[in-house]
Image (tube, rainbow, N blue to C red; front, side, top):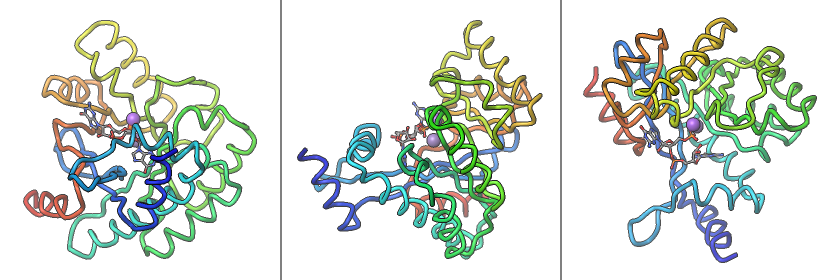
Length: 253
Ligand code: G
Ligand code: G
Ligand code: MN
Ligand code: NA
């Protein structure tokens, strides 16, 4: 495939970028973390969406090296944010199935966090429900080893995959990210029933929650009313390059 070859070439030419989207405390709107999001710039100034190239990277196996670089780069960047006098941000990093299933994944993560000099508690890996469905014993073992290091784990896009509620009680998870399709439907009764059930369940299981894809004041207020502490979405900020985020954080201080 032409696009896979181009991706491999651009990755080895260091043309991929990591952008950062703020995660905020809903009540104070203070930025408490950022999600690292890959961007693939093209020579004409446009970007190929990760929604398009991540599946290619997964299918070709390239995601293992690219994903490893994202961890290294974003941990290094968070350390650079610290050094420019910015708060102790949490870094949320997306992890694909083929990365997570490598037996030495926890050691790789540990090494990269160590190199960056940040505390492992500040790293939150975002995994999807599809990861939890595969090879339950391997997954449980990897999650246990990550937990021992102090690394946090969130379930991304919660509720749209094959949610298996049994994993929520069995595995050492820290957070649920409520998928934006539910947030998008939060003005309707059906959306509210699902959201409120997820939030209630998460609270009672001692899991933290973050509402994704918040675009409107009403949505923010609705989640504040549910005692959901954190959110992310275009209402607060879009993903942006590191230098723009530094500007934004300095303005906030
Ligand atoms: O940033 P955007 O909304 O376009 O991202 C689209 C999809 O690509 C999202 O599902 C997001 O999780 C995924 N994605 C973005 N960056 C990464 C990454 O570094 N690794 C993996 N595995 N997925 C990513
Ligand atoms: O699957 P994942 O949750 O990792 O996807 C994150 C993607 O969601 C990012 O690519 C980001 O661009 C996108 N995103 C973040 N906030 C919003 C939002 O408020 N609305 C929409 N439509 N997309 C968002
Ligand atoms: Mn994510
Ligand atoms: Na998501």
